[in-house]
Length: 448
Ligand SMILES: *[C@@H]1O[C@H](CO)[C@@H](O)[C@H](O)[C@H]1NC(C)=O
Ligand SMILES: *[C@@H]1O[C@H](CO)[C@@H](O)[C@H](O)[C@H]1NC(C)=O
Image (cartoon, rainbow, N blue to C red; front, side, top):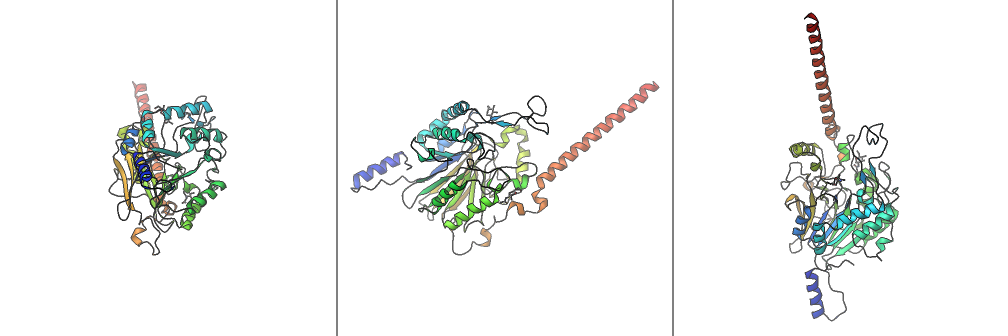
C-alpha cells in the first residue's frame, strides 16, 4: 500500500476521522505532480536535485542507472589493458564487489540534494544495467540477486516486502483516491533479459504473467509504465551500423507483445516513461493501440551526451541529433533545440490537472535550473480508445524507423563515411606535398 505522509494526507485523515463513523480506509491523497529521472553518477556533483525539490513532486521515480556500480576502463588501443581494437585483451566494463556496490549506494543515498527530496516525496524505482551491476547485462549476470538486495535497501523497501522474495525488482503502485487513481508499473528489463540480438524475452515468463494481471486488473485513470530502456524510439535503426543502443525496438517480438497486451486490456490512459540514452526526448506512436502512446524519456540526472565534449562543440552534437532520422519524436515549438532532443542533464515531469475538463496532462523534460526544454500537453480524453478511428491528422507517428527509405535511414553512416573519406584524401594530399617538397629540396641541395 503506497501511502504518502504529506500534509494533505494528514488533512484527509483528520477529516475522515472527524466526519465518518464507518471503518472505511481513509482516501488516499490526490497525486498531481510526479518527477522521474535516471543515470546519476554518484561521484559527480548532482545539482539537479535542487530543481527537482523545487518542483515539489509527490512521487519521484528512479528509472535506472541510479548509481554507476560497474567499473569502466578507459578506451585503450595499446598497453597492457587494451579495451578496444581486434587485439583487445580485457573487457571495457567489469562488475564491482558487493562492498564496492554498497559504498557507491551509500554515497548516492547521502547526497544532500537527494536527501532533501526523500523528505518531501515518496521515492520508488527500478534499475538499468549500471546499477544492476554491468553495462548492457541481462539474465546471465551472476551478481543479480546480491545487487537486487542492495538496490531494494537503497529504496527503503520493507524487509518483509514480497519484492525481496521475487526474481527481479518489478513492482506496481496505486496512488490517489478512487476514480482519480494513478497506477505506476515499474518493469525490470534486466533480470530475465535474453542476450541482445536474440529477439528473445526482456521480461521473462513470471514478469509477463504479473504484467498481464496488472494491466487487466482494477481500473485507474492513468497508468504509467516505467521502463529503464526506451519503449517507442528505435534509434539503433538509424544509428547502426555506427553504434547501437538498447531499447525495446531491439526485441521486436517482445515489443509487439507489449503493445498487444495494452491494446487487449482495453486500458485507457497508458503511457511510458524511460531513461538510459543520456538525452531527453518525448516520443509518440499512434498505431499500437486505439490511442497515441507516449514515451517520455529523461536521461540523465548527471550523465548527458553534451557533457562528454567541450561546449564549443555542442552545436555539432545538436546538428547530428537533428540529422538523425526519427519517426516517433514529437516536434513542437516547446523544444529548446531544433532537434527536440536535450543533451544536458535533465529530469522528467508529469503534471495532472484533475480540475480541468477533460483532465489535462503535461509531460515535460526539464533542465538543471528547472526550465522546461521539451513539453507536450494532452488530455485523458485523447488517451482513450474511441470506437471511431483517429482522424488521419492524428496519426502522424505511425511508421517505424526501419521502414524509412535507405538513404534517409543511413544518413548518419553516409555522413560519417564521407567525413572519413575527406580526412583520408586530405592526409594523402598533405603527404604528397611533403614528399614532393623533400624531393625538390634534396635535388637543390645536391646541385648546391
Ligand atoms: C563519475 O564521475 C567521476 C567524477 O567526476 C568520474 O571520474 C567518473 O568517470 C564518472 N563515471 C562515469 C560512469 O561517468
Ligand atoms: C529496431 O532496429 C533494429 C536495428 O536496425 C532492427 O533490427 C529492429 O527490427 C527494429 N525494431 C523495430 C520494432 O522496428
